[in-house]
Amino acid sequence: MQVLADGKLTLLRYTNENESKQYYAQTASAPLLQPLVQRDTIVLQINPQTQAENKVSTRVYPFRNVLWQIMADCPTVQTSLTRLELQESRLVKTVTAYNTCVGGPQNVIRKQTNKVRVSAFVGGYRANVTYKDDRQYFDLTSDVLPSFGVALNLKPASFNPHLSLLAELWFTQQKYTTTYDGVGPLGPGYERTLKVDIASVGLPLLLRYSLTKGIVRPYVQAGFVAKQNIKNKAEKSDYLPRFSSNRTITAIDLKSYNIGGLFGVGVTIPTGSKGSINLEGRLDKLDSTSSAAGIISNSRGLSVLAGYTFGQ
Image 1 (cartoon, rainbow, N blue to C red):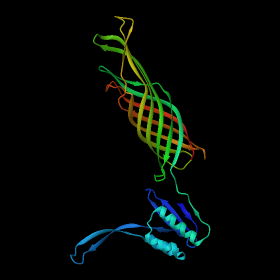
Image 2 (image 1 turned 60 degrees about the vertical axis):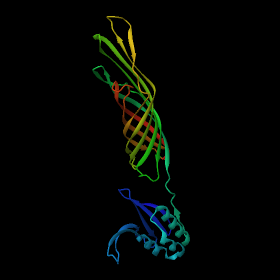
Image 3 (image 1 turned 135 degrees about the horizontal axis):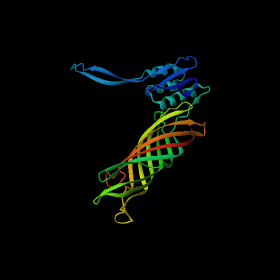
């Protein structure tokens, strides 16, 4: 139960497991909670001339009768009930007007507002890609490299209290190196080395579901990520000892951006009014890395991050 307005008449709100809001009234003289109900019903009407049946939707307001009896000692507010709808802002306004009318101490709970919090995080990032060279396929794993970023966490007042929206700026790196026996028009027998170096600034847009109570609060999140590759260099070099001691280098064109999806799980550990510690693991999957489809593709990233969110 959350108290919305308190005085001689108290207005309360309860949110059930389906996130549906229910409202109750309570007076000092009758501490039993009285539900405030409004509902739509279907009424069957019969035309007296044609006897045709017609179903009509109509709204009934039992809560008005409840408040009418409670507010009998303030006719000015009581008469306004004939137009009152079961809307939170209008209920609070009406109950506040009644408590002011009858006098005595009262308290109006401040309306919940949107909350925006800033967080910073740092950790490690490792990715895998599939590399195709002629008819050979290789699964490559990058080094574990530093990753960091900042985020804005928005909790809209109208949302489920467990849900929040996040927008991040996220820096990641990928470096791959592999050496293998090349196969070309001259046949096998030469050494080929692939080197890939990518640095990206990503913009993840995420929806997070988290628990709101407890010392440790788990959460899951998922969404969309777009990455701008501020460094995207890839090349393969061939060493043919039968013909030359020099290496032949061929560049591989990489895309300047990537898009994909992201999924993460983590925990939040509140540290009082100053903020909270976040520990998270996340997976991302991106589209083709190379400009030509199928050469370097199927990028899957794994990151482990630790951060701090400022404010409650």
